[in-house]
Image (cartoon, rainbow, N blue to C red; front, side, top):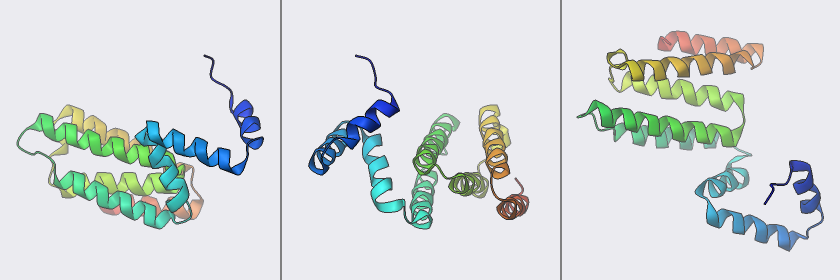
Length: 158
């Protein structure tokens, strides 16, 4: 089976009734958790980005608090899981400002958690890649926001 292009899908969706569209959306959410999470974002959080960011930060706090610090292997797995979750929710938003806020928060939480970032090459590289992503995302924002986030990064020592 060949996958249809976005244009073909758009045309098909435009020809459907409201009831058929609802059924298709509900059917899609049954099969993948990602589809359900994206639909949740679009229905409940798309209009309130601040609340969305707040909920993700709370989830990040929980995951970082639950890190297994007894083993560097399991700690690294937990950190990657937190970052994977953060990046997934940034993708749902598609907003560069949300990306910057969440990645800055992630890096700040790692530092505040007392994790020795430079003790592990893998963790150090992961941390540096996030800082590069933050800088790249900041460069695409409005000048005022660029300045504000650059100052925030300086105060955090990033």
